[in-house]
Every structure is written in C-alpha cells, then in structure tokens.
Image (cartoon, rainbow, N blue to C red; front, top):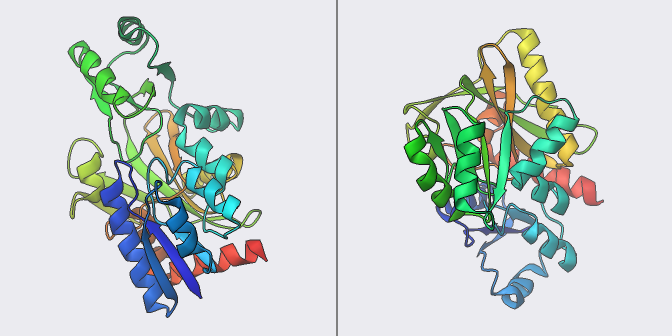
Length: 311
C-alpha cells in the first residue's frame, strides 16, 4: 500500500513528533509498504495535496496543536483521504482539557477539581481567584497543550504569577486543577467503535519528583511497569473508565488514557491522548508489546482497523 506519514509540524511538540514519525516510517518500510514521509507545514497545503492525492491512507505522527487538535483531520476529510485515528470532533474535544473534563463528569468518570481562565481576564483577578480557590499543591497549565509543556506545579503563592504567564504563552486559555498525588497509570485503548479493548495497564514510575517532559522522553527518565500491580477489581475499574472515556469523546482506532490512582479517592482521570507518542520510550508500544504485538504489527493493525472502517 501507499502510506503517507505526517510528522514534525509546527507545534512545540515538534521534536517528539519527529521521533514518532521516524518510528512509524521504519515500521511501514519493514512491512513493505510504499511510504511517503511528510514534514507537515500548514503553509504548504497545495504541495501537501500533490503528495497525498495518490496515497491509500495517512498515518498522523503529529502531536500538539495543528496536528492533534482536529485541524489536520478536518483537512484530510475535506481532501477525501482516509487517515488513521480519531476524527475532528474527538480530536478537538480531547485536546481541550476543560471540555473533556465536562464530558468525563457526564459519564461519572472521577476528575480533579479545576477551573479555567481566558487571557482577556485581568491577570490580577485570575491570580486572586486562584489563590482563594485552590490550596497547594495544585497545577497551572495551558488548556490545549501536551507533553506537560507550560505546566507548573504550584507549591507556594510566589509561583502563581509566573505560572500564569508561562501557561498563557502556550494558549489563550489556561486551566488550574488540584494536584492529585498517587500512582501514575495509563491505559491504551485499541479497536474500532463498538469493539474497543483496553490493553494492560501501565504504571509509570518517574525518576524525578514529577512526571515531566524529561521523564516522558529522556532515555531512562521513567520506569514502565506492565502490567501494573493492581488487584482484579481495580484493574477492571480503570480499564472500564478508559474505554468509557474513549467512547464518550468519540475516539477511533486507538488512544491512551492517563490516570492518577489516589490512595483514598481511587482513580482520577487526567486526559485522553488521541495521538499518543510512538517514540522508543513511549507507553502505547509498551502496552501493545504486553499483548504480543511488535511495533510493526501494531502499526499494521492500526491500518487494518482504519481500512475496515472506510470499507
């Protein structure tokens, strides 16, 4: 098959996307597909059309804005080109943390208390409201960003002003939420609508205090325990929440759902990643390996599921 891989892009997660794209391209070549690697540039749409009009399917290895937020998905739909992964609405909803939380709450999936703010609001009013509403530790982060970019864990009032400023450099809206301590867990979801399955739960043990950018992508930055050491009831509950979140947002083919397991409150959902990382240190390939899928077999399965959807 002729398969295009969109990678790179213009978001602040470009470096991660370059690594994801490289992994996808190598796997597709290993599978003997005819592969076109495209470093996505939204200003070169005419060139993109010429590159894509002959392909059978597109794999999206982009992360962050203009890749994971529904814009590229909408473009491919307008072009009439099949692509792997979630559609426009699910991608956009999952990227918007505040909206996604509303959807999770509607489906009785436990969430952390949060509040969002827009850049047109007075910075002084925002700072005052945050300090009156939240008790340390809590998190200030962009509403639409990934890989913990622009995120600050607030441990004292002196951090708030700078954290607000940092978050607003990434997005026009920011979200403030309670910091929930506990075990970092993630669940990969796989399958077409109505036939999704949750893969084995992974526990992430970061080498640093918090699961930050370095912990996610640096070699040896964190340890992945798969399957996570949980009793049967807790395993089934978390996998149920993951599948419910995936379906509630309307995700397709694959996603990864992140949780914190609090000692008293139980599992708290953090977010759904519609285009989870596929780098050598990424979590989704680890979960696939736990059910006997090599990286290349996982990529082929994504394509097979996609073509079944379009047939």
